[in-house]
Structures are given as C-alpha cells and as structure tokens.
Length: 343
Image (cartoon, rainbow, N blue to C red; front, side, top):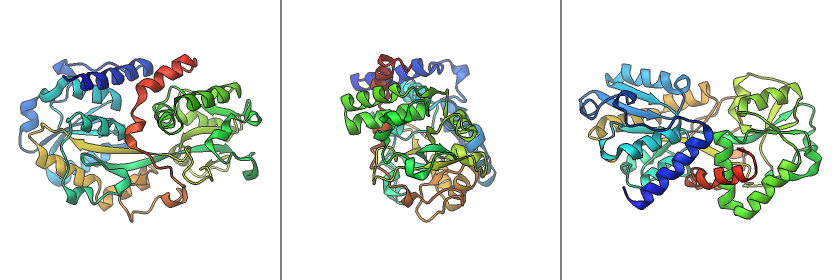
C-alpha cells in the first residue's frame, strides 16, 4: 500500500474512532461473499453505505428483473471504504454504494475504482458525477425552522448563526456524519481559521446538542428550538406538518446551501464489470430516479426527473459549488471538533 493510500486509510480510521463505528475487518465471516463467488455469472457483490430500508427494495427489483443475485454488505460508508482499502485486490466487492460521494472520489484517486463509460456518465447531471462514479440522489443541507419564527427573522447566510440573537435557540448534531461532511466543506471554502472561529462563535450561542438530524426536526416542531441544522428530507418523512418548515439560505451559492450526493462506483479489479454496469444503469434510469424522489424525498441526479411535490425544485436552492471530495476530508474536521469539545 502506498503512502497516500495509507494516509487515506488513516483518515477513514480516524472517522470510525470518532463516530463509534466498528473497525473494518478482514475476517471472511464478515464479508458477504468470496472472490470466486463474486466472479460467478449472475452474481454481484455490493458494499452499501445506504440503509437497507432506503435502497433494499431497489436491489430486490433489480434481482427480479435481471436474474442477477445481489449480495449486499450494509454499513457506514467510511467503514466500507476502509474495508475496501484494507482488502485491496482481494476484495470481493464489485460495487461500492456510498452515502457521500466524496469517498468515491477519494477511492478513485487511489486507483480503486474503474472509469465509467461516457454513455453512462452522460445520464447524470455533470455536477453529480466524476469519471469513476455517478450520483444517484442528493440531500440538501437546510435549516429546519419552528413555525413560531417569522420569515423576516431568518438568517441570510450560514455565517449568521453566529449572531448572538440565536443564543439558546439553535440545535445541531456534531457527531452526525452530515454535520462533519458539511464542516469539512467549510474548511475548504472558508479556510481552517475562519471555520474554527465560526464554530466557536456558534458554540457561544449554546446550541442544544442532538445525536442526529431527526431529533432536531422533532424539537423544531415542538418549539424546543427555533432552528436546527439538518438534511432536508427528515422533515418531509414526517409528512405535511405545520409545526416546522425547511429553509435554504437566500444568499446565492451560500456555503450553507450544500447538496450531499450518494453514488456508486465499480471496483477497478472486479471481474464482474458487466453486471456492475447493469446495476449502475438501473439505479439512474427513470423509474429508479422517480423512486428516490417519491419514496425517500431525495433529489434525483438525472435531469428532467421531478422532485416530490413537497420538495422544492433543485434550481430554487441557490446551491453552492461543491467539490464532493471536500466532503470526505473528515480527518482534520474530527480533529478540529475534538479541540472544540464537540466530540
């Protein structure tokens, strides 16, 4: 393993230690298949960082339609990427399905992912793909706002959360992977010192700490907090609710308006690339993209697919320009959060 690969593995391991995820293992009993099984006709091994409840139905539909048997290892994306790095050429994985595509970019730079054909890449919005991966769906970072907060009082920019007017009125989840990915993006956009200063200023506003996104949404609905920093779909999953609303910053391309993209890549040494490509093609076809919009309230990555009726169109969000690889630069972020007592 090269020094750069070792560095990436160390960063991933740091992420696992901080989030409490189990360390990757080479124990054959922990993998869904063997290399020989992965190479058999009609089979496919997927390392999947998305939840089974979200994407399991799509895998079943793919199996029924194609006759290809899909063996899925579910887990945290960081753990699965670390597993893949540890296994190297001996990995049984054919496809890695990442919750955050920055990990796919990092793996691609290390030569672990195969380049994808142009006809497949061209199906996806250019903002949500790389030469070695394609995005399948996106989650927008937003503020969930309690109904008792007037529109006129809302912050114009993410930086405004440092305003003392929000003291005792905020919620956040520093232990959540989406929070950490967003802070990683801020480090690359604002710089290390400015990001640290902003986090310290928000800390002075005494935000309530939650373990993840969904409790913030519940708290905003109940009026326990006025603003929470979350992913957009958590509110929509609760159904239409007058107790809270989502809010994207009005400043064009504000650093708070980030879309986090889930996506897939094919392992470079896979001997099963034909079936792997069929899976990727399946997940970006019209019916699958409509599934992500309809069932998970996420943003499709294929142009022309409408969002759920409860979800605002992507072009209305004023999205920041995001290098997805920056979202995966979590090692220094976790170090910073520990220094601030947020881990």
